[in-house]
Length: 296
Ligand code: NAP
Image (cartoon, rainbow, N blue to C red):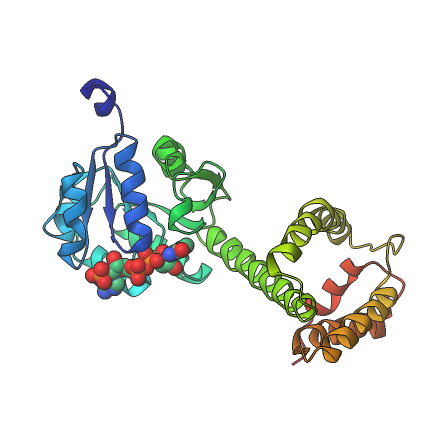
């Protein structure tokens, strides 16, 4: 890459060189962004100096070095520790990729605004090896101006998706998507425990499971999302009552094989609450009606 090309790229500071921050800094360096790094434990910055990064001696120096500052540290206390140690910040942009709750993002945005910083909150929907893959989603919310100005640099990290001006939007999607992931993992592991009890390999089951999720379940989700938005749940594919009967077969097969049934028992109880609330002849999407009304 020529030095002219390199100089067209926005200078970026990355604060936090843990597993994730290191992957972010590496992707920016690889794409020729002049990159400054700072980490609380200085030793982690060494490999980045060898790859051409400037190593800042203090958070203040790190913030001063670039118009775009990306922070990816353990939690919001760590974020505030580095922000509090920074000097004058007016006109700069802070992209916070530290995980947190939506309310924390709103508080961080207010703090950033009081320092004159533009604030964009973000959620990284991958693990470090996925950073730099354009298929991986990075969710953003907060300042549209920061997002548009720095979109080319953010696109180096993954596919940047803007969710709106409310700073907590990215964190809200993040927790909802992680909940989906843990439910899917646990449902898959429960099914794996059932089938591997009969000497099947987990990998043989996962080939079929992934096709099921991708080709069928993803389509059901799209159909049901439209029903949720409409508030009407026509039971013309499979009703809640039919699925209560079907989950009984899973519980039976798992119990016969000594597999823990806490998850399917919870799912069955939730479906039964939907049925008792009058949704027995409706589609599975109607279960949202009981989820929206948590028992007190
Ligand atoms: P990590 O490897 O444990 O790194 C934590 C980083 O935070 C280190 O750079 C650490 O500095 C720094 N830190 C901790 N306390 C600090 C403080 N008081 N002041 C300044 N710096 C402090 O964690 P990670 O996996 O990189 O995760 C970082 C963030 O990314 C988290 O919010 C995490 O939820 C989020 N995230 C991670 C993943 C993932 O797959 N890893 C995926 C999505 C989102 P030292 O090196 O000095 O300890």
